[in-house]
Image 1 (cartoon, rainbow, N blue to C red):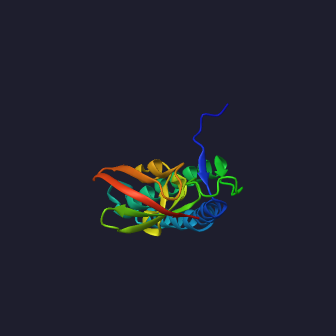
Image 2 (cartoon, rainbow, N blue to C red; image 1 turned 60 degrees about the vertical axis):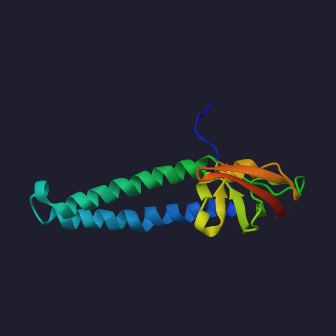
Length: 158
């Protein structure tokens, strides 16, 4: 039995990771190897900053490749079966209003592998998502955030 972490994600999120992995393997890896080759041609490696930089980038690229391969291998695709319509679940977009001032916010709850708060996609492990999961339209929820508690009312779920 494998103890590797399971990464819940949408099919689109998995495809995006697969594209990044392909880019790293087919393009970036070759670019870094070429940079190392050029830096070696400069001579003494002990004081060669270009070589050190290229080796650091190579380590980063190889680490990212390993991470992506594990995420893709252990991906659990979020299925949209319709049985949980009207309930906040992974893969749903939730619109809520902050109480009492009425600031409206909208987020799609996704797995940590495809979270991007700047794009409105938050991880199911985030404090906001944890507070909203399982709730329905009209529910008032207290969300504990690092900046303090926030009361919100769910306006829509899609």
